[in-house]
Image 1 (spheres, rainbow, N blue to C red):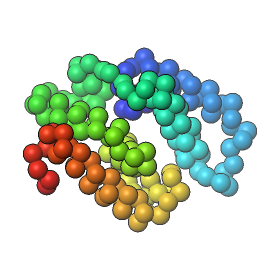
Image 2 (cartoon, rainbow, N blue to C red):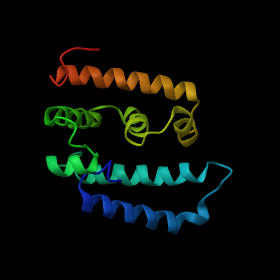
Image 3 (spheres, helix red, strand yellow):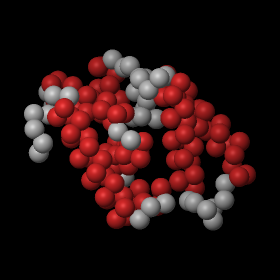
Length: 151
């Protein structure tokens, strides 16, 4: 949650809500419908969506807090880190399905096969979705002046 909700106290609150929902709904879990991880991820996803709806889609965090959350080492330049954080901010302008696959791939470091199992898609569908999402993200970054040109 710390990677999805950079404000530490808010991330902790949402995490506790996720575990409360999971514990209260564990009897409704059906392993025949989806793996446990996919079920738990769906609860976490819904809690995150609820959080951002309540916050109006914005979550302000200080630059120093963001560096801790995203584990930015001192070997990276401040300009690079600022661009990185701006690109992450652009994710909120993408359709929810793009946000979901990019979040799992780039932030959670999952492979396409893992994402496919988690979301119930084919690996090929996930690969195409990620490719389209990255293309859309690049276009947004160029329009916002974060990137100079499409690479």
